[in-house]
Image (cartoon, rainbow, N blue to C red; front, side):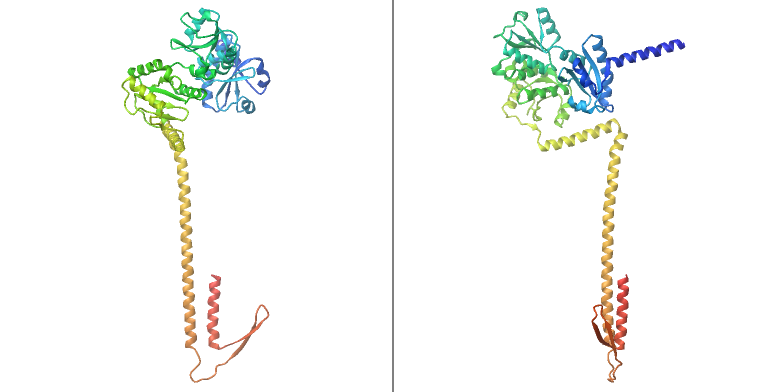
Length: 478
């Protein structure tokens, strides 16, 4: 039994060593050695929850690429420990996945699944433009890819542009080159050389005079005419609108209604020449994402047009029942007669901040009510106590000031009464009627400035003045 346990422990340690071997921990020496190989690197932070969620997937990616004989080496780097190197690679968030090939660094922006990451690594690690030497290879690639870009012809300035565009957009799709005899017989090209995209059971050629730059045309055509839209796809569509120099408006529909879905697919196919330049058609299941995007409530089924360049959206003024009504609604958005809602103005930005704060609070309370009470109740309680203390202190200070003023008024009244009493006493105790002369006392005193003054005081006035001086001294002491 002990031998079995020892064997299991050794096997476990061996497997762990294999796992850590296929995903290498990188340090600051990586900068000098990376040019010799193609690297797929995960820049992570130890405290990042999304990074921890990606960790097992990342080891599966390393194992798959290793077993398939791929030249891509897989590694990971703690971006917080090697922040200087991470900044050189343009890391702004965690996790960040980059494929490093020579002096170039390609960002991965797709879903964080094993198959998607592996497909990205194999696509970017290979040549920017792959050759299709036979019809069999062409048919095989047509079955594997929903959208296929092919350069047809020999050496030309158009091919140089095509290679540059392929190097730029290889992170999104594949690029191929072939001779004209490799293409199906049904494909007729207006001229050679040409760039052709095969998708939706048809093909479309690039026209430099009507389609603008080759980069914008490829970036627009890399999507099917009609697709299922989620948050990631909508983000990519927004980037396409900016790159393509269009108005950035995209059409989104969400519902399980077969009738409306069929109508939109028909418009996407039959009205391609009218709407393909400005709109992307598709559907989205449910309305949760759309509600958060427009900060409102949209019923299901519904039709909505989103402008990702300025965050405006358009809703039909009446229910769409026919194909003609749908086409009229889309045309009204194009000619500006449809009423736009939302936008990116100051009011909408403030509304967005309030909406996001409310959504965050509600999500916290839904997931963990106790944690929500602690996170938001404790700060509110502290703030309430501080406000109460400030208000109470101000009221106490005001009450003390009023009492002091009242005390000073009482003292002034007492002083005035005392002066009146002394004056009355002096008048009542004046010279006697018999005219007898009172004893007189000649008093003299010296001032602090050396001036000698003399005054005459009778006995009664001297007594009254003494009382006044004693009262004044008591007031001064108080």
